[in-house]
Image (cartoon, rainbow, N blue to C red; front, side, top):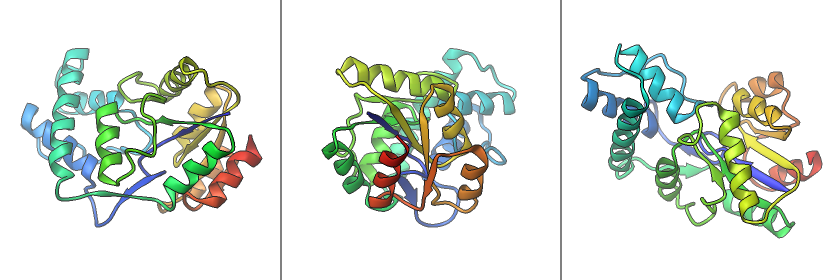
Amino acid sequence: MIILFDLDGTVLTFDGGPPGPGRAALDRAMRELHGHEDATEGLRLAGGTDIALARALLRKVGADDGADAIDRVLAAYVRHLEVVLTTRRYRPIGDVAGAVAECRARGACVGVGTGNVRDGARLKLASARLEAVFDLDRGGYGGDAEPRDGVLRAAVARCAAHGDAGRVVVVGDTEHDVRAARAIGARAVGVAHSPGARAELHAAGADAIVDECGGALVAAIFATA
C-alpha cells in the first residue's frame, strides 16, 4: 500500500491569525517582483498547487504567466518562506510522527502528495520538526504538475521507482485532495482540522474523516484500503 500525505491543513498548521507563513511569503514574493501589496487577498490557497497559485497571482496583477515568470515567483516565494519561518513556525496536527511510524510498521510506503514545491515542503516540515518523518524522495510536489492529480501521479511514480506498489490512499483536508485521489483511482481519507473542513470533505465523498493525525487516522486508512 502507498499512503500519500498532503501537508498544509493535514499534517501542518500554525498558531495565530492570518496571514499564515505561506501566504505571507507569497505576498512578499509578489511585492518584490511585481510591486503589488497583498496579492493573495481573496485567493484560496488550500488545495491548490504552487504552479497554479503562482499563475493565478500573475494573472491577477496583469503580468506574464509563462513558465519562466512562474519559476521566478516560486523561487522568490521559497526565499521569503525561509525568512518568515524564522519567526513563525508550523506545528503538527496531532501525532503525525506516530501515525507515519505505525503506517510503516504495518508495511505501507508513506509518501507525500502536496501542492507545495519540494523546497517549500522541506522548509515547512523542518519548521514543525517533521522533516525526518517523511521521505521526500517518495513524493509529488506542486512543482511537478499544475493539476493536483498530476502531483499524485508523480508521487506514485517515485514510490514505484523505489520498489513500492499497491493500493493508494490519499490523506488530505480539502475537496481537491479527494477529487485528485478519485482521478488516480485512489481512496481518500480526510483530516478535518480546520473549520468547515469536515463538511467539505463529506460533500466531496471522502471515504473516512478524522479530526487529526494519530491512531484514528491510521485505523481509517487501513479500514478504507
